Length: 271
View 1 (spheres, rainbow, N blue to C red):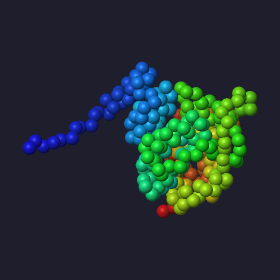
View 2 (spheres, rainbow, N blue to C red):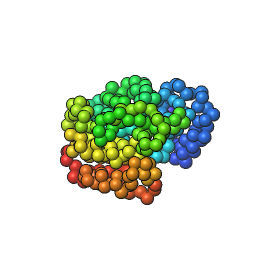
View 3 (cartoon, rainbow, N blue to C red):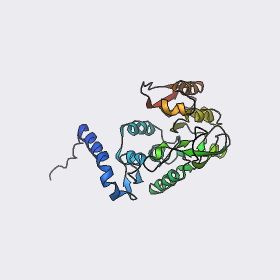
View 4 (cartoon, rainbow, N blue to C red):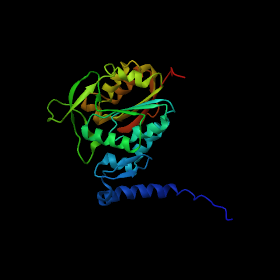
C-alpha cells in the first residue's frame, strides 16, 4: 500500500499573491457570490457582499484584520470577549470559537444594516455563545445618530461627531453601568475588549472604566487613528492616557497614523 502524504502548504508568497489577486477580482466576480454564505479567510461562514469593503476584508482577508484576529484568537477558553463595534461579526465569530462552549461573547453593533448582517452570520455559524446587542457603547444612555455608513464601506459608521453634520441613522447608546444584565452574562470570567468605533474609543474607555466588571478586563484591542480621534477632540495621547489610568500598557507603540494597539493590564487581577 502506498503511503499517503499530506500536501505541503503553499509558499507564503503564493498565499499573499492569491489574496491580493482576490481583492482585485472581487469587483468583477462579487456579483456571483453576493447574498450567498461563503467560508471567510478566517474560518467562519459569512453572507457575502463584496461591494462592502468591510465584508470584502472579512471574506478575502487583509493584513490589518489578520493582525487583529491573531489577537482575538489568543482569548482563552472560558473567557469573555466584548466586541464594541462588531459590524458583520467576523471578530465576534472568531472569538466565539476561541472562548469555546463555556465562554461568552458580547457584540455591540448599533447600525441596523450591520446589526442585521451580524445576526445572520451568527445564525449561519450556530454561534449560541454570542449575545448581540443593537446599541452603541457610550458614557451615558441616550438616543443618538450614526453617520458615515455607506454600502461601499459599512465600517465607516460612527456616532455623529459634529452638530453641523446632516441627520443620519437614529441609534441608541447605552452605558455599561446601565446594562446591569451584563454582569450575569459575564459572571467571573476574564475579559478581553475590542474597540473599533471610528474615533469614539476614548469615550468607550471612559464607559468601560465605570463598568462594574472593569477590574476583570485584562486586555484591550483598540483601533488608533489620529484623524478619527480628532473628530471627537481626542488624540492618541489622550487615548493611551485613558487606558493607562485604568492600568493598561500598550505593547505595539506604532508611529503609524492608523493602527491597532494591544494593551495589557500591568497587574493582572485574574489568575
